[in-house]
Image 1 (cartoon, rainbow, N blue to C red):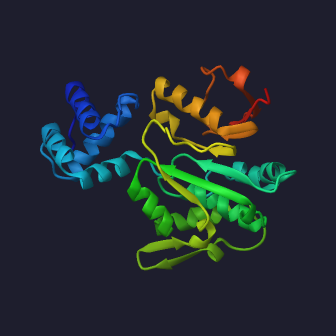
Image 2 (image 1 turned 180 degrees about the horizontal axis):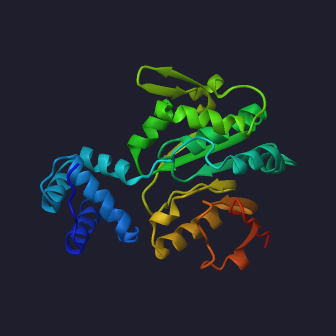
Length: 276
């Protein structure tokens, strides 16, 4: 594949166009990540240069939706980091439901649906799914529609099955998906009661009263300004004592976390909102 290198001035012009035309402000995305995604889109759509990208995205709403989908980074597999999902199964989910008839779990970015279906499968196996309100949001309408249909890449099946066996000693992951040609499909009854939200990038329509937020391996694509803004949103969405899980390589040390959150599991990057 040919490469196209985007300059800083062109990157800023693209960000300005997206702000002017769609009122989406991407200036606080990590610059290197944002540039690489735009470069990939320019090449994959056979566009000549940044000006061609700007003309196309400013005049074609469908192309803007494609851009949003390309900007969202997919999770690579279901039950990624099986030790975390085993902990959720054995400790955190039963602990959260204890003393409560229902609870909310929020997935702020469902680019591939892997995290959403991972949680839904565990909750189903624990017979807790009926007691949980799953909330899934994304800036990409295309990703939301793909997740609702349960579509995933069959190339993930081998690693998905292996991860499942590291969490459950009984049953098979095949109970929850089928393969049809070159596509695989999750059992969408797992998410039939899930609330889907089309977000903008400032998340001004976030859910309240949430007991668990799973937002792993996403904040690395934001600069510190956007990270701090989002952590504040997470804090406000959680009930006191609610949990917030980020990626193993992500940290919120720069945030005033000692006042707002307690780090309850360093290995799995699990934080708990303080009671007061």
